[in-house]
Amino acid sequence: QELPFRGGLAVHAASLVHRGAAYLFPAGSGVGKSTLVRGSGGDPALADDVSLLAPDSEGRFRAYPTPFWSQDGNVPNSLPAESQQGYPLVRLCFLARGLQMRRVPLRPAAAADLLLQHALVFARAPQLYGAVLDAAISLSRAVPAERLELPLGKNIWPEMLP
Image (cartoon, rainbow, N blue to C red; front, side, top):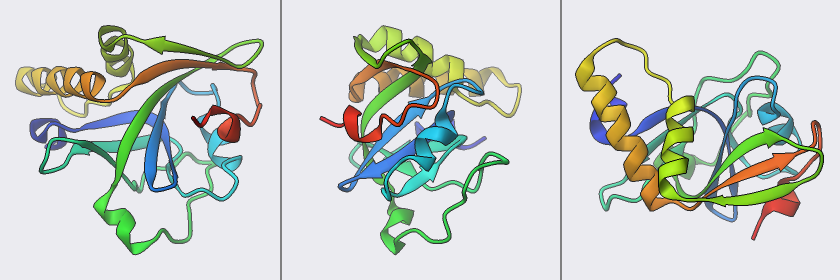
């Protein structure tokens, strides 16, 4: 509940780390978040269901490990000690089902709209909704975003990296 007031968000999303940078995969249930995490090829997973994001002291967004995993998720036994400091968030990849893998860049306004659809708000308070909106707008302006369409069950993790 305090996270949005610090500029952060809890998002219905998987988050993975590759080469010290975090990638966020917001999506609805059944789209493939846990499948993506299972096929990550050994890269650290921070979450497969609920991801936590917050700006650091310099205003750059970071992704943090979370205790919130899906029922069928593989909770990692251990993450490196530095994971508690979070990882710089370098890309928002909104997952969607498709017949083939396709990446569609998103403008910040479209990314903010999609992010709000996956943001988790645990209380009803006008101030909280305003803080969530502000955080979603800030995040969508700070981090490149794309819609990532993929066939169900396809392991796209190595293919989607720049």
